[in-house]
Image (cartoon, rainbow, N blue to C red; front, side):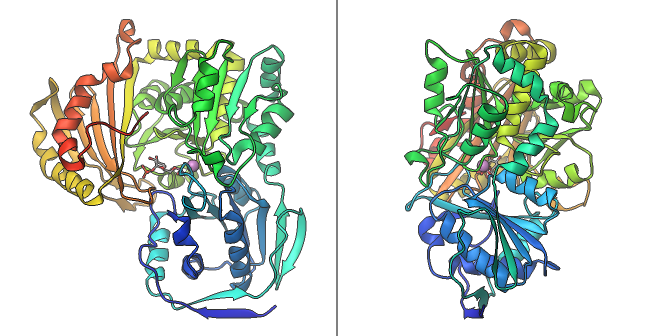
Length: 543
Ligand code: VG1
Ligand code: CO
């Protein structure tokens, strides 16, 4: 098979963000665009000759085209084997699982996660290292630097590989192995959870509605929940991955998972509702009459993980991204285990997980995971919740309320201002950077400000640093306001404002979070002059 070297010139803007490179499909579809990035990636890696690469994506529009390009480039660059999911499909946690299980050199995930898909929507590519997790910034920065000087890429001239037939074929000297996207992942889940207890829960009439949002988790959820655990047929809704996610926004929150919300608000609501996102790494958990915030979910799972066989040894430590509420910290304190605060994005948990310092990790953005892989994992979180419910014999609402009663409740909300003008967003952040440190010692929203900074992180394992990770305002009563700009969008800017307040008094645990946080929300708006800088009077999405 002939290897071709194709001349190319650099594209601007190929710097990976919070989670890989994300752009409109139309940008990715330009000739050489994907090829440049993939060659820059291979040029930045050392020692993969003859090694194994795992490739898969969330099935969105352009997935199959991109997989074919990557297979041919991997062959031309000297990989020995590519394991690719059937149909080009692998969820993000499944890629992580397959890399680890088969000791692959690394993997490529094709996804723009929770962003919409389709010819006019988003696409993305992300590289994961041999430990299974997203490449650290020193790798992504090297790839970006290489994209700016690239002058050629290598690709074999060969017909497309049949992605729909399981088994091995060759592409030049490289073996292409089309794998069942679910098998390795399902086997791992069986090792972690008390499958018998969950099976008994379903057999006893417990009902779940899992909304796969027409995205990648459909086949995983059907096989594990309905197949192996005996949940009723129809438990999984929107379970067939579609290239455009049915026109929806595959983001598991109360706004976008409207089909699930309708089921949960219906007369015959099931005991539990759950949803996952485009690439299967996010989760939303609902009980009958209750929504579990992702920050609470991390705290509750930390307190209860020992009920699952995979975590019976206990939790070594817990890590959360900085904007995630401090509910998990309170559990860690009680358990006498360390709690870590990292910048936003799963890549910052990798070193802590590899070093065994933490067992569970979470983000407020519907991300929860553990040391079983190196990505957040939507279906895993649902299974852990099922395991906890089965073992405790309590409803989700009772478990959550019981947790608040024991630890206090952390009222929490995130307000997103999507699609705002980038210049205005940058000016707003510059304004905060200049003024917030001066608030320390002053009174805002009736509280004394004790912290005002731009979060900077030094990794406790490898000493790497990350600056400018979000503006923090901390108050004497433990309340916080955090501001940061999204690093996953593809058009304009998105301002995220995170607000939390700790409420120890169990008599006041039944407030609407927007009311419980009203004075802090108002202060967040005026301190940053959000209306002035963005022209917006209200957020576009509240979670
Ligand atoms: C968002 C979330 C962040 C998450 C990231 C990737 O990033 O806030 O917590 O890790 O998405 O999630 P940002 O920069 O837009 O705030 V996913 O499900 O896209 O892999
Ligand atoms: Co995702």
